[in-house]
Image (cartoon, rainbow, N blue to C red):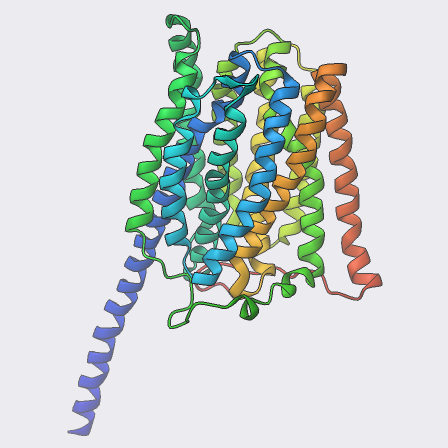
Amino acid sequence: MSDSNQQITGEQTGETALPAEQEGRRERKKMSFGFAALNGSYWFATCFSMYLSAFLVSNGWHSTQVGILNSINNLIGAFSTPFWGAWSDKIRSVKKILIVLIITSAMTFGLVPFMDWKIAGVSLLFIVIPVATFFMRPMGSLVDNWMVRGCNKFGLHFGAIRCTGSITFGIVGLSLGFLVPKINEASPSGNLGTRLTFSFYSLALMLLLIAVLTLKESTFETGKKKQSLKEMQFGKLFKNYYYITYLVYAIIIQVPLACVNSFFAFLLEEINVDVAMIGYVQGTKAFIEIPMLLLMDRIRNKCPLYYLLIASGFLYMIEAFAYSSATAFIHIMFICLLQGLAGGLHIAAGSNYVNTLAPSNLKATAQTLNGSMVSFAGILGNAVGGVVIEYVGVRAFYRVSSFVLLGALILYMLSFPIGEKVLHIPRPKIVKHGVGVK
């Protein structure tokens, strides 16, 4: 009788264990689709915003003006990004903050093409665009933070999910590269296609809003109350040697990298290419990111993440130097392949590296502080870059950018033996990822 009962109990246990396992797989699959929708819709919308510099150039702005405006934007972003990140950690919700940012970004950025008129000789865009930046700039860091934490918590394939952003960005970028010049050519103003991208950005953000509203937020610890500023203990971040050295590295490389993107329209002008064709470049770059992202989970289980960051830096350096010698659009297209490889490595490694270094209650703050330092670097880069281009030309600017990137790489590589041999701080270990990976 007891044997029979044991058999029945064992069978019942087996019957309930299998559905529980299947339910877990279904839940992870559902989360994967949710994060893919979040990431894909964010980059779908972001692709429309890349025409800001092209719009300004088409309206007769010169490099110094563009540089000043981009410096202002980076100054705004440097404060707004950690502000919103810290606020999300405080209330323990990235979702609620993103909803606010999406709605305000859609309203403000959509106004840009209608506000290019002057008061006392100063364009209103110097006010409208920075206001829009205050809400737009933090979104990328918060989306990355939510996605990285979710993937690490549930063992999801970060690279595959992040690919959805590269795919949507690539498709939209290539489509815009074809459509925008055609619409511009057919319009009386000559830049209608460029102007329409602002309205489509606002509309595309509604897809992101839907993705945010439908995704369940479970990356924060349940049952925890809101944190006070004292409880958050921000000092933990600034005492982390490898987090700070990465921030310094990110600042230095972003001084030239921010300019490489901000002033790309002037490089296209230099080789007599329609600036509206920037979509072809950005779309191609996005597709080249995909292989690196797909391989990310395998690589990170065998290789320290900071190795990938160093490799991406080398590729960025070669890319900047190669742009200085480009003489035709076909050259630009080949060179942007390097940017795609570098971007794939940096995207896959950067956010995950910061996540592994940050305390559990400050992960959004750490991620957005990283974004803030990038903005600070952009202030200097854009202010100086615009003047350099105006006086010595865009080619010399790209050449100097490559030398700055080389210097940053050397310093970053030296930080690891210094930390290990001089300060006796062990290097960050490989943090393995995935369901069942130990």
